[in-house]
Every structure is written in structure tokens, then in C-alpha cells.
Length: 241
Image (cartoon, rainbow, N blue to C red; front, side, top):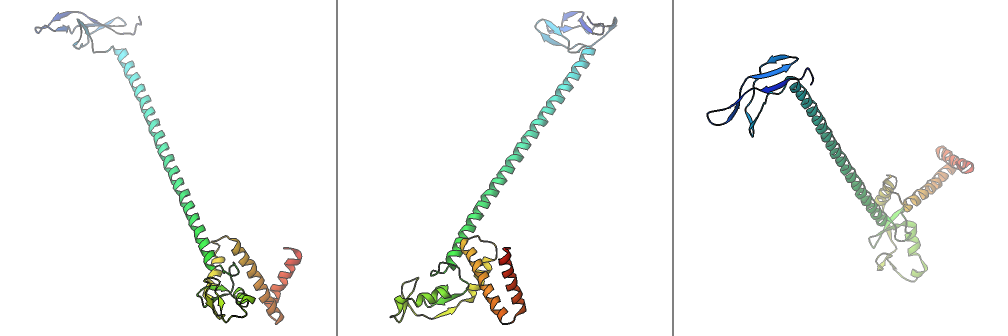
């Protein structure tokens, strides 16, 4: 037996007046040969009495073990809480990303729909392209000027006072009025950068051709700035820049 261990002995046992067992308070404790007194509880286990006063050295060890166990349990709980918080944050982030992707998909779909509506609305039904010079005919629709003139002077209508509308099929006259509002609106939409479409690319290419013809005409009339522009265009064409 360890010399530092403390032994608790029950010295005497008798009965109370009520018939219950009790333990005499005299206790012999031995720690390195020294006798002490201790206080005993009254826990009954059958006919045996068990002390609730722990041994001095063992009690301290038990308390230390309990503290270590409690600290370990708290660390485990903290780790579990931290793990749950991380999972919740990850779930929220994933939900936000999903909503973001859904909103982008809806916005892209809406943009595509708006683009198709824009193209279909402003596309000339004769040339099937966006026009730089819209005219309004007597049928209430807008057409490309060159396309409309070519259409109304087609050989099919040579012997008719009126021509048939390309949209309604009903007779219309050959008169028209320029629609500058449509011209400006289409140009603004094309160069806004909001849409990508083959007809928009064709519009830009034709716009360059129109601008070049205008600059060439101005250069022939003595405009120095227009002449520089034409010279730059020719130089780029030769150098393939």
C-alpha cells in the first residue's frame, strides 16, 4: 500500500432508536502513520455503511480528473458548435450563389427576349435587316428607304396605281415619309453594347461604309479633316491594320 494513501476505517456500528444503522463519528485515518479524525456520512448500502468523505489525496485527484474531463467536454462542445456554424454559413453561401445564378439566368433570358423583340421590331420586313434610313409607308409600317423604293418599283406593280403592302397585302401608295426617330433610336441601341446579334454586326459594317462614302465626298469637296480620315482608311487597308 502506498505510504501516502489515506485509509478510512469504520470503528463502530450500532443502531439508532429508529432502527436505522449509523456510523460512529470516530474515524481512524492513516497517512504516513498519523491518526486523524474524519466525518462520515450516513449512506446505507444494505447492512454496510459507506463513507461519503473521500480520502484526502484521492479526493484531490478525483477533482482534478473531473476538471480535466469537464474541460475536454467543453472543448468538444465548442468544436461541435463551430462545426455547425461553419455548415450553416456554407449552406447560406451556397444558397446565395444559387440565387445569384438563377437571377443571372433570368436576366440573360430576359435580355435575349428583349434583344429578339428589338431585332424583330426594328428589322425591315423587305430587306430583313436593320436600316440606317427608315421611312414610314401608308400602311403604318416602317421600312428601309432603299428597300421600299426597290419594292414599290418592282415590275409586278408597273401596271397598278397602287402596290400591295409587304406586311398586310393590302393596296398602298408609293408615298412615304422619313422616320428620323427610328433612325436615332436604332443607332443608340446598336452602339449601347447591350446586344449581340448578326444583324447588329451587319449594321455596324454598313455604317462604316456609309461614313467612308460621306468622308470621301467631303474630301473631294476640299474638307481637310475628311481627307485625313480617308487617307487613314486607305493606309490601314494597305497595311492590313
